[in-house]
Image (cartoon, rainbow, N blue to C red; front, side, top):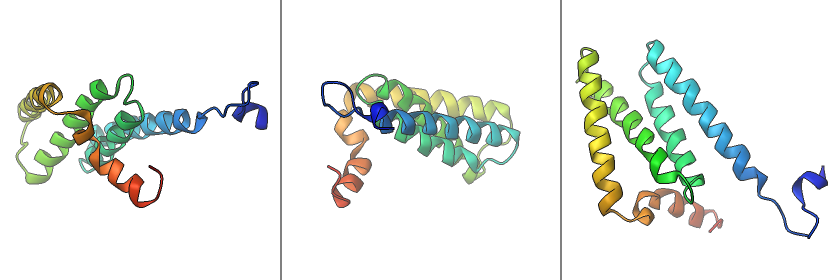
Length: 127
């Protein structure tokens, strides 16, 4: 058990982040599948799970996967407001979300994207 968590030179491997990242990807996949099958409230779950994945993967692909979070949260919002009546409305929502993500990534610092998670980590003494 401890050989998995500790490497030979004494440092601790942070496998928990890998486990959390894959868990968030699995939750996102399941939530999107359930949302496409008909229960649109699962777009919220998928968007938030992908947001956490983006935070965990922040040093490599975090900002790229944040686009998926933008899309899922935009779909959740527009479905909740009743603005989506056919599939073309969903396509328009996805396009607007990607454009909003592209502008945000170019003009807003990473710190502001993940401020809610940083704030919660400071409350619980994790940062």
